[in-house]
Image (cartoon, rainbow, N blue to C red):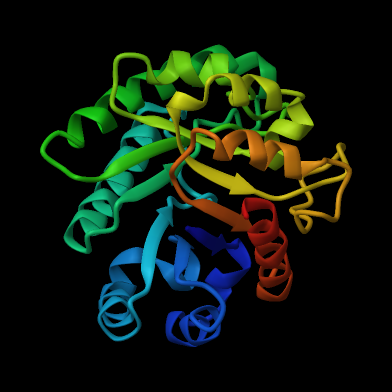
Length: 252
């Protein structure tokens, strides 16, 4: 199924955004922050499912969660917040949450070793929490940068080794890291796909056919084995809708 997601939607009241999205998409990956803080929109999600047959996934908060924080107190807070989101999704029968690995905010390369170790420890705790749940967790690859880790499938695989957690393959991030081929080679770990394009220099979240990356053969290679959802990460609903039409053509 083709869905849509955008941080920009989180600035709009849930009910208002729902009425716009449901006309174009049956699947919405909610970015669970700002006006879409998950516990505050539970009733709206239930209504959308019952009244419109909408389906949902969740992207964990981007701004304030850091499961790889070198501060144990802040890392614990991030884990507690994520567990609350997981429990909310389980109540709502939302099947999948995408999460980011830790970030090395402020200190960059000097602290990345600690961030990697803390992220791995957090993943083990999160995995343990999924026992008895139907919920799936997907860890997303990041674009290269002084603050980020997990650019490629090798590091993501190391993070999730021995757990039930899978990978969210973000095509735009992989394009910037030069790691697209690795994800296509190791498709069995992929639980979720984020689709967007860029100029090869910055994480611009351009329409699927609007950047430097030739996404059509990437989608073709994925579709031969991958059976999960395709989430278009768009800058706005108009561009997302146009990308949906492009993707539908590629998947025929």
